[in-house]
Image (tube, rainbow over all chains, first blue to last red; front, side):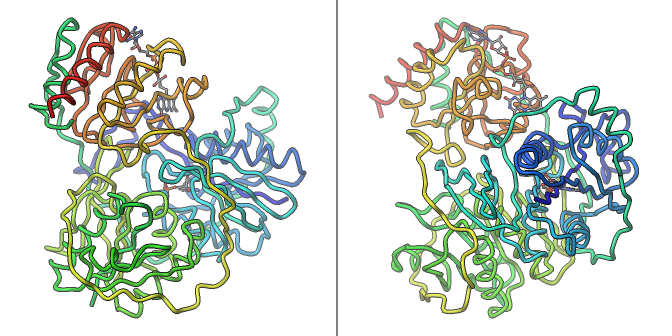
Length: 246
Length: 317
Ligand SMILES: Cc1cc2nc3c(=O)[nH]c(=O)nc-3n(C[C@H](O)[C@H](O)[C@H](O)COP(=O)(O)OP(=O)(O)OC[C@H]3O[C@@H](n4cnc5c(N)ncnc54)[C@H](O)[C@@H]3O)c2cc1C
Ligand SMILES: Nc1ncnc2c1ncn2[C@@H]1O[C@H](COP(=O)(O)O)[C@@H](O)[C@H]1O
């Protein structure tokens, strides 16, 4: 089985959110970047488990500048066989998807795994866009994925129900919690990652459809109203009469 | 010229996310002198669809929510027939699978998770949540066709009415390539993403055997239950209850957090809640900084008092 996993890099989950250049750009100063948790914990690890059980190769693809290479090496350390970086600075998810689709088009991947969403951009867009551009079926927000022969079975959370779905490969899947358990790279993996292939490919031209023009931080929260523990019942009263939310 | 609204209208009653999407679509249409065409699927009675407040309804009876390719062909086809400028989705499970596909197919710029109506004073600009609700971003869409996915709970529903014509879709959607083999209910009670009130608990509850109190409070308040990540990881509670940056992101009217420290990754999934109440025995718990109401106290003493007060409130109303 030939597996492609989409890997993006995002600011560490505890990073301070601040903006520069008149609030038009994210302030990356001093920020540690990590592999997007959905890509690492779920898409990559499940991809590796499937590869280990059934044989094949696992390639990662990242659209970004040279600054993403440390993050890409982390994915290699966890176990990917090879990595591809498409050299572009995307403006939106569509531009990412066009690059990934252009790369994947003639490579014969059986399974393309994306994360549910990036934790900075929160689009949930790239996976389904890649599926559309490649004319492939797509299973969204899967919390479980099994492959038998050329048939994939997955579970997805919809409206408080688990839906069990089936599709034939080749296929695109976006991966959510439940699919796999996080793997910590070991020393051998980290050493091996240094010599695994990381191929840089040029970007294809793409039309600009949208762009983020300005960021805002939410207004600061009002001070908290404290209620003594022995009068805890008052909370329910206040939520009903003052906040009017229950 | 028209605005297309795609919504999942199935179920015993039309989901709130679908009604919000329709409200949004009607407002966009009113601002641009357009009509609203509701595009939907499944086995929903025509009279119910007719009364939702769209000018026109197209329904694909045989399509399922699982096949985003069929739904994409459906929406794209109707959008082209109607010469649609704007296509509105809900940013829910079905919308997240279909809207990006439609956008890619039509080469339309896509705003995912919109929280405002478009500002068209110069161009087409929409605000959306980013950084898991820790910031917002204004996005300019420059393509002729625009796709917007509306974040649940970001605009109040305005009930529609009317008697639209309801037409069955007769075009070719192709064969389904993703098929539903079955569904499994994930437990009792109210589904989390739809809930107006959420009672959530963390490691402070000590063990799964103590969740009876949390569930009882939720029942009395007609709330859904949720939990922090370690609670789901230790299998005290099912995974689908895990809220936060790596779990479900929710924006209820009221979020009550019990024995949860308020780590930044937890806050990222709940900070869109309108009102937050925090119960924690540690006065230094970071969650109090994000709270509207707080109680410093032991959950095992506070919860029975809350349950009693909720029962009293229910008896009075
Ligand atoms: C990349 C990443 C992603 C993450 N994603 C998420 C996520 O999506 N969601 C999430 O929740 N976490 C997430 N986490 C974990 C997060 O950092 C915290 O570890 C987690 O939220 C803590 O859960 P908790 O508050 O239940 O437990 P703790 O931090 O152990 O807090 C328990 C709290 O209960 C209080 N307490 C104890 N006993 C009582 C009592 N008897 N009565 C009242 N209060 C009591 C304590 O004072 C304490 O504040 C993530 C972490 C990382 C690194
Ligand atoms: N720059 C990128 N390079 C490679 N994959 C990406 C990139 N951005 C997003 N993805 C993938 O697409 C998923 C959804 O991203 P998004 O649409 O931004 O929420 C992520 O979880 C990744 O798997």
